Length: 263
Image 1 (tube, rainbow, N blue to C red):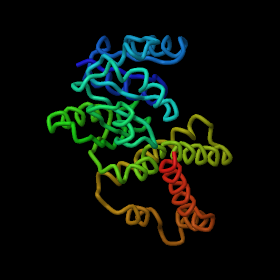
Image 2: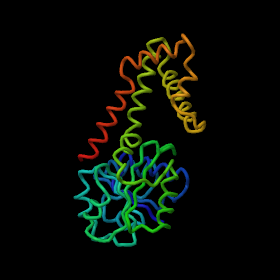
Image 3: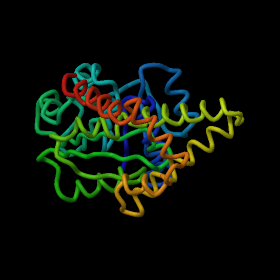
Image 4: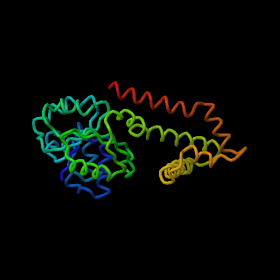
């Protein structure tokens, strides 16, 4: 199985790194293209995969990931659609581009899958939504899920919730990184060394997330377990509520989903 990545930016690199880490595909069976020599040189050095400036060369792979920005999709697809056949799997990695849009852009009966991963793919902890079109067989669906699951959780979802997926997982690492950074800044203000502050904040987020996933308890119940009467935690929670912590997250995610719908 040969994989091709048209576009070799952060998201593509995260997926390539995750796939190689699990040894699902050998590095010599992956090829990536980019718009600049600097980018492909960087990717070749970091991952040891094949690289090219020619998208059409990548489009010959068994599975082709379209990992460019949404506003480049029309141009990129127009440049490769005559070399893509009905046996290949085309995987779209773009907000705002529906399965139907990609199908129409290729202008023929193609096997199209829309996915929305996130950058934790680089450390094998992504979450990826998968939307296959009607031309994908059950066997191919399983193959795709297994490939994507090599770098994290992978689930087939209805495309109608893809905007919610983008808000809750595709974009959310940025929110989490901001949260970690803010906690570390506060710890530094209290006298903790910067490097140690990042470690304590990041590990606390990691451990808390694992508790949600592994205990099956409601996040509110887990929060209550930390909040002792008249304690330090409930005092912090009170301030977060006063400052609109939860409502700001909800509003930010709503804005993210709206942006995705209107791209």
